[in-house]
Image 1 (tube, rainbow, N blue to C red):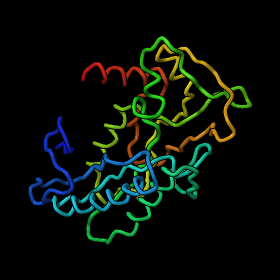
Image 2 (cartoon, rainbow, N blue to C red):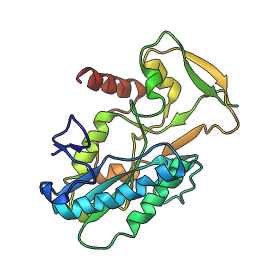
Image 3 (cartoon, helix red, strand yellow):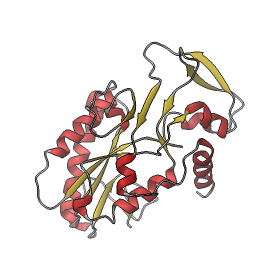
Image 4 (spheres, helix red, strand yellow):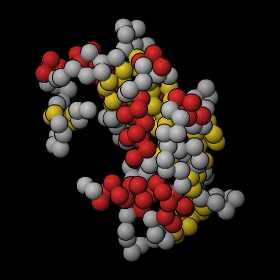
Length: 246
């Protein structure tokens, strides 16, 4: 495994303006890069980065490319399967769906592409900064049923295992799209509790989305038993352990 990035720490420092022929051969490109916020023009860089991933795969002789998409392509809903018609409601979701459409049009040339529709990653989503120790309480929306937001999550350790395992599958076994998620939805309040954070509840605005959860059966069929951390407490512990090891 070779970690390539724009800046240290990394095994190789590389930016898209540098020659591709300086890169080593590999069997899989895992495209971790992406733009999560900004203007429509800035978010459109997700599509440009997907094209760059294809060029990387060609230059390195890779037969698989794993692209990071997002649960945001679906919009709100519960237990959403990969076959569900996408209906994004955010600019980020629309940008990732446009990226997926671009990837679907890539030429058939022996390179297999899989768009990973990621659940929220513990420690890397919008809630993450609030999970760190602080004397101030964490703010969460409370909806009409008295509950807070519910999301599909995955622990960082589980995500790493999924990526490594997918890089070892026969290229033809990769689906076009794959939900990458723990099998059980997680309440954000449960994550706050697991992190030892107090909650300051506020009434949810009309624009707030209470539930975005994914169906993980395709992942389980593809990689049986790959998910280890299925509760908020285990997920937060895994994240904190990895943070402490940095």
